Amino acid sequence: MTLLWFAFAILLLPALWLLILPLRRAGGVRAAQEAAEASEPGTEQNVAIYRRRLASLEAALARGDIDVDRFEEDRLELERGLLEDTERSRRAPLKSDLSGRLLVPAVMILLVVASVLWYRQQGAEGDLALRAAQQQVLQKPDASVTALIEALETQAARQPENADVWRSLFPLYRDTGQVGAAESALAQLIELEGRRPALLAELAQLRYFAAGRTLGADVRSLVDEVLAEAPDQPTVLGMLGIDAFENGDYRLAIDRWRRAIAGMGDSRSADALRQGIETAQRRLAAAGQASDGTSSGQRDTAPGSVMPDAAIDRVVE
Image (cartoon, rainbow, N blue to C red; front, side):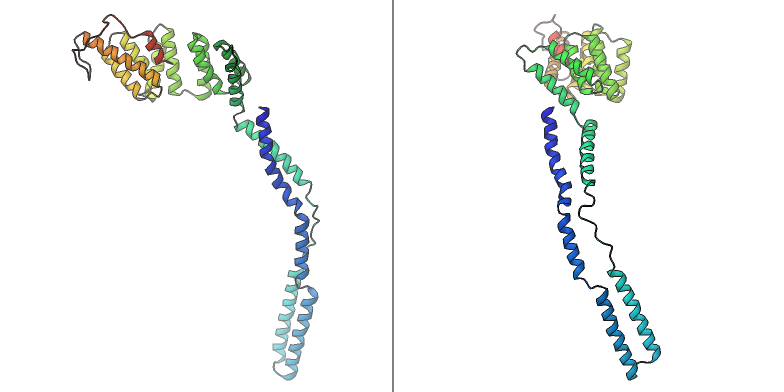
């Protein structure tokens, strides 16, 4: 994490430099502006032009080129133009190039504080700490699942609102037989992310196997909730296929497993379901029944066998 904050500090340096740059150029900009204003016509030049034009009007009046009314009209126009030119040439004095110097450090501090607060709210500091804890355990020669669980539990105590912590703990609890802890971790995950079908399917599957592969009322309620929102949810379909297989309904098991494989992204679990489909097809063939896409002449090499427990276990990995 120290290296991360050091990298952030390096990234902030160009932004802070851009804030300082206008202040460093302020003196040159002020000098250029003063030179530009000095080269523009001033009030004295405007008055001199006015006098020359007025003299021309008086000479024209004396020669009889214009009458008195025209003279008065043109003279008023000259006076109005002189007033407008004088007003335009009047400028406020330039401020010192040192004005606003204290504002720059204040903006720099505000930028740094805002960046840190934004990262703490929107960044992945917690995930980085989680990954660092995992790597610290896994890189040890005597790394073990128990040590990894303890490291993740420490992270869960430090950042209980981080869903990734509970997402990492759940499969470790499940695979080590800590059903109660696994269900608790999954409940925390559901509380943080909502009742998503994938999470509810994991909970239903966990309770199903904890109850000795029995579809109790609580499991059935979760299954109905999942299927109402996601009819092709592979975890639930895989579990229902196992239940149908163990109840001897091989056709239903095959149908559910095929649907599960269609939406499954894990190749190992998909292979386990394919093994289960082959076993169910052999059972149907042994009973003289043909399943879809198979011949009734196919025979199970071990008629008394059931779907291997290892294959069933891989379905829920």
